Image 1 (cartoon, protein in one colour):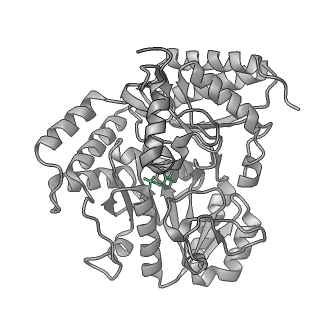
Image 2: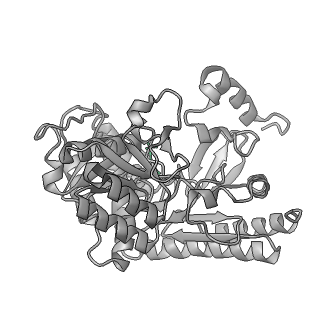
Image 3: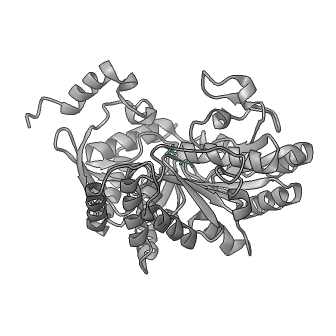
Length: 438
Ligand SMILES: *Cc1c(COP(=O)(O)O)cnc(C)c1O
């Protein structure tokens, strides 16, 4: 490695000639924070190495899937074995049944599940199923929640109360989102008003129960309870998008966390992704038998996929779920995550930097604010320049957090106390040398 040749920059320049923005998913381009994206060469445990051979402690873990860290031996073995038996058949396999059984065991609100290849596909299919099963068209989503990039879900809030959304992306005709109602997260009054106006036309309400696409914002207990009650009262389906939170915040997902505070709580349809594939393209959606049997080939709601239930991906997912299901796994992971968040909090406090963090299981978030935000509007008030200083300060010290302040972070079982202590010490140094706010 020649120190004055930056291989990351070279690769980025090359990538930009052939791939739009040089990346295959926009956030990877570092547009929000500036600088050169790190091209990953390899990864092991809690670390990855970039094209310059520089090591980083990885707090993204492929945006959640790598809950065991990279290259966990049991997972690698399962994947290698599966690959030798064939990559894809377009015909059913025993392993799909095994994975489905394992998912239903861990998430008891689901009686049946269908496997797909991405979270986008799972959320899109769940919406179609909800519409098909209810015979209704309208849906509620919340500002700041991401459910993949299906047309009907790519909407942010209009300014007024219970407004129909405008597409967030070019290429989405307004007619396609005319049935999508966008509300403020954690706003019970708006929710009640929307149901009073549209309740009988609503196919579903889709929500990230702990929103990880606006950093880390919990739906309040009372708000969640109201979502459940109103859906039941009006015959709309409650769709939990647990693509990020599933098998990540707890073995039973965010729904198991809410069930601790709301007796008997369960969503109607769950959408899963990320951890479920352990780093391979795999996602799923599921719910009660009567709803799931509306899907083709049994029912009228069409849904299909050439690579769905892929044998290598299912091997990876199954091995991952078996590891995280071992006794004590989530207790240890939660303790690591909490120690990171508390460490960052005290580093910020020592320097007089406004900071608030929160976490659940192996997922965390923090805001350079005095209080935890409840809505996307409040999230937007976080201190951008301070975040960028922290991001680049950590990156320079070999620590990789999400390159945008609206993203959650992830701790894996491979992160050691030493990794976390090193991260906290780095943050301490950065906060101490940052110019005061204002
Ligand atoms: C990541 C994510 C998606 C989209 O999943 P992809 O596999 O990227 O298509 C959907 N919903 C939530 C909550 C997510 O975090």
